[in-house]
Image (tube, rainbow, N blue to C red; front, top):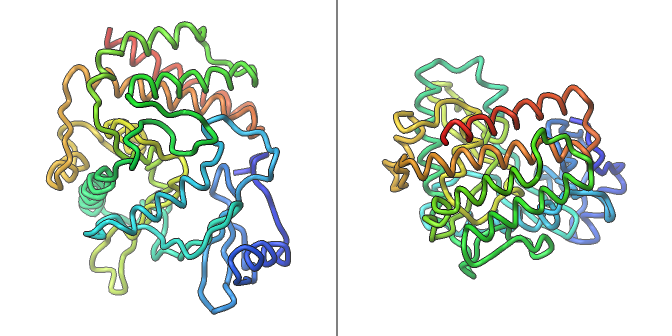
Length: 330
């Protein structure tokens, strides 16, 4: 996906960035074009290891407020996952990192969205259950300072309680929407009223947990193994949009890959592994609001990224559907 936020370097420039910051050079093999924000390259490090290098946007590039400092967020998440005692969240290894890049190990397999046509319905169900279990383990991670919201200090979007943090997150998006003249289809005060009306439900969330918030199939790798006798999840990627918040918010992106309702394989795997998801009216209210939040994000990011009118129109429809879904709960 083409985006104004992507920063492209020639092979020699990329080698210099790594060598200067991490003390190891690389040779560029090819660009990975699936990403929507950072530039990613497949490289061969000087010591012979293959790696994926992600580049942050150039200094001064226009980004949304929540996107400030998110490369450091991704590095933090990789380190926290590595420190999990059970190792139950497969993800690339963080090989080295600098202010403007991450170098990661190469995962086996392929993104789920590209492998889906080769997976039987039975395999898909088993993978959804496995993904639920992995998500439950991911949600055992908690912030060291006990605060909710986005981890990067640059965003300024954190608070001591979830209602305040989420309100700040929404306000930041509305500020970005005004800056980029985003077509939200509803007045900003209408969005604010939706958050206020859900206050009782948001205040039920008292313990912050790590929420990836981008677990669509393109960010989940699956691998058939050498003998192709079984398929497993080999890793989850792209943790930069993670925040400390309500674990139920994870269901928003997980729903892009299939059923994420109370009777789904995904939720079964989640609960079996110790996760708690009680689909009360309050949780359903919060979940509908999180769908609106994602819809806002998708529309507003079209501005700084320079996405075309067709993509923008699709995002506007997604937001409208999410708002309609929230209103139906009332």
